[in-house]
Image 1 (cartoon, one colour):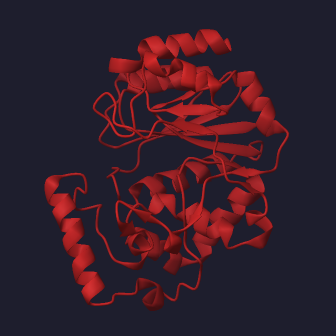
Image 2 (image 1 turned 90 degrees about the horizontal axis):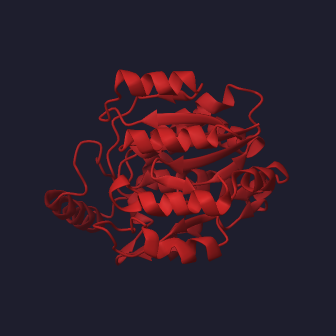
Length: 291
């Protein structure tokens, strides 16, 4: 059995439609952001369709809370020994291929489909992303996306660069730090290894809890520091993402204009979709893929 794990924070009705669609071929587990209030009718739909869901963490962009949710969902899905392969997606994803074909592809592989890059060799918007784990941040308390949050981030960077802060040395972290998208497809043995690593290395968890965008570091760092598992990683997470500003969002919220590019892409899931802009596109994709 394969499991799809959904991190959701908005548009609950769309998430329910996605979950019910996936339930034909997969066990489905959802975490709803604690700030996202479900109606009794929505809870009834989840129950009637035997979709497992939790709502335990208030998620803040840039903080470890997103990674915390992923770990909780993975642990929950691992409790069912029938689950052999796991897909982590967001509540704004949608299948970008025929679901039976998607299922069968992963049924025949023990590979890990995950993007990764060595953090010390990578910059994003001019910042060395190794700093996002080397330095201390508290974005569970400070809203990173606000104007104040942006100024606060620059101030934190400047002060810690000046003071030559090295959290790795303080915590005894002797690993190559890797970074990549948090959306992954992973077999059971690799996931169990990763979760066990988290459970037995509290200083590594502390690094993540006090880091920035740590949900994009934990699996990559654990698996890429293991020769056994790194050799099984395919550096392609089979996700279509349009890295442009469109429909008041970056990355883009997709609409009808993106249909041709979607069906030409070698991907199994795509994001981001929203009720306001994407309903016609979603209907076209479902008809095209016979989902």
